[in-house]
Figure (cartoon, rainbow, N blue to C red):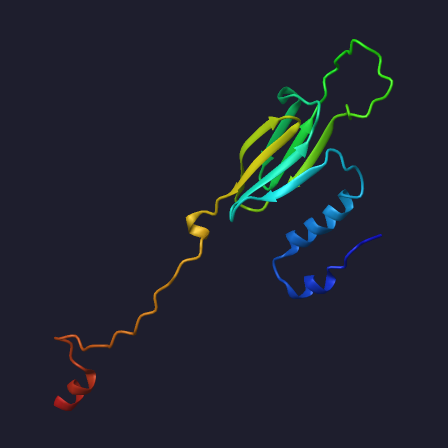
Length: 159
């Protein structure tokens, strides 16, 4: 069993619980089915593409659902009758479900099915409020005496 122990990191890294949980859950989930095969590609600083090989599926057979931090791709093969009798079936005809955990602020931009390849384009859009800002460093302004205000020491000396 290939299990990595995150305990030492959990002790020293505050606020990363969700990341460690995702890594542990992913290792448990990936031990099973590898269908359909897929690639994840970085296409730019904030652009990604997930490519799935789904030969034999039509656009009507595919359902893509994007929720907060989760992308679910499902393929449901219709009951199509073949004119002939198969002697060998090497092309998978079963349905599938693939789940992809998405980082914060990642959204699905586009999805295309062409030549048995489903390409899903993702874009990370960080809100302006969350982007780093440069803060100019200034000098402290000198304090000045406001005209018309008497100092209490002057009042006691005059009396």
